[in-house]
Amino acid sequence: MAEISFPLPDLGEGLIEATVLEWLVAPGDQVERNQPLVEVETTKSAVELPSPQAGKVVRIHGGPGDKINVGEPLIVFEVPDNTAGIVGTVPKEEAPKRRVRLSAVLDED
Amino acid sequence: MSNSILEGAAAAGPARSAAATTTAATTTVMSMQQALNRALDEVLAENPQAVIFGEDCGRLGGVFRITDGLQAKHGEQRVFDTPLAESGILGMSVGLAMAGFHPIPEVQFDGFAYPAINQIVCQIARMNYRSRGTMPMPITLRVPSFGGIRAPEHHGESLEALFAHVPGLKVVSPSNPHEAYHLLKYAATRPDPVIFMEPKSRYWQKGDVDLAHCDADGGDPTGAKVMREGRHLTLVAWGAMVARCLQVAELAAEDGIDIEVLDLRWLKPIDAEALAASVRKTRRAVVVHEAPLTSGLGAEVAQLITQSCFDTLKAPVERVTGFDVPYPSGDLEDEYIPNIDRILFGIQRVLEYKRG
Image 1 (cartoon, rainbow over the protein chains, first blue to last red):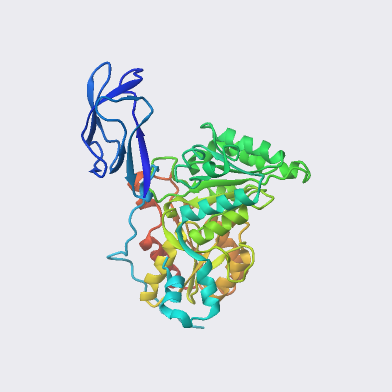
Image 2 (tube, each protein chain N blue to C red):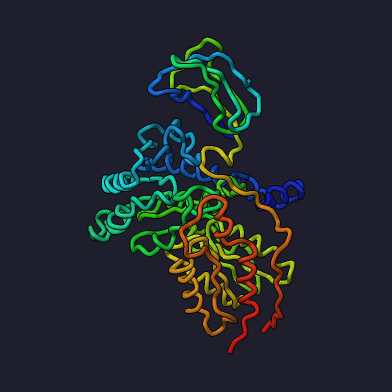
């Protein structure tokens, strides 16, 4: 298993920080992509941040009322090694259910 | 790959011979990613001139985690991040090599090597030649290669024929964790530039790695390697296609066809003797690669086999390859990369060939 950290993104144009209002997930939770993670408030508005990916939550940073700077760690996910940090997935290797059969008369000369 | 050596030793109990125990003691199960990481760690420890760099290679440890933890252990002077500029990464390698370093640069994905072709072909490959042997280029260029991870465009390519065509470059591709560990350690001690093509779809497959011995004969990891012995036909492959060919060989055995699988390993220079030795025995050959058919390395392999085995070949050497199209991205690559049925069809065409 590998860990992937998701830093607080810039939620507006040039915002530098956000305040945590409420965490909607906790360490140990299995989350799906786009599932709301946390509600934060910026100087512009309060927004829910969707999860950038699926994974198990390992750590969350900051409790309600805490300020987090843009670019600082917000949440850390645990993901299987074969999806860590890459731009693709490896299809499962399975024995074929149907396949081409070979036929040959082999003269052993 | 199975854990057969370890299981065998455990199952046999204390009465097992000393030789088997020694093998088990140096054999460990790891993924190719772990094997490559360990090899690089040891190269850094053994060679103070070795330096590793590339996009995200330092702090992050690479997008595939091949350099994971190496910066923390060996320092920012020896493992570091570069700007997002492949021509700069390889251009800097030339300068470092001139200054006596052994650069081990990474191009993050094979498709990103194209912007650095000038540095690779015009400088790295021929500096030793140009300088009459006074400026060797001991550069080990790691390139996560081939498809199989359903990635976007430029993240899955097969550049082996391109590199193999350039005089002055050596090209190698490991097929499993054991080969990855030994071939990388060997490549990183060469005085010549080596393009090290890592099959990215195999990074997470685990296998036995005998850290102390590369090959049964105890020699250097040069040349090709028979991965499975057989009598009726030789499948020639490299990189990720070796595992698929081994799978095909097991299926063919169900149909009574005994297939030999030859892992070419070195794509430049190609081990012509190993090709000849195998096909002299089996008298039939199919070469499998992911790269497009036309001017692919399969043509070179077919010619080398024909040259040495023309009189005894039962059929023309068959090629099962990718198609002459840009490497497709996403799920579409399943239609492009040689699959089990396409390899079996290739074998069948050879088996049923009639002369005249």
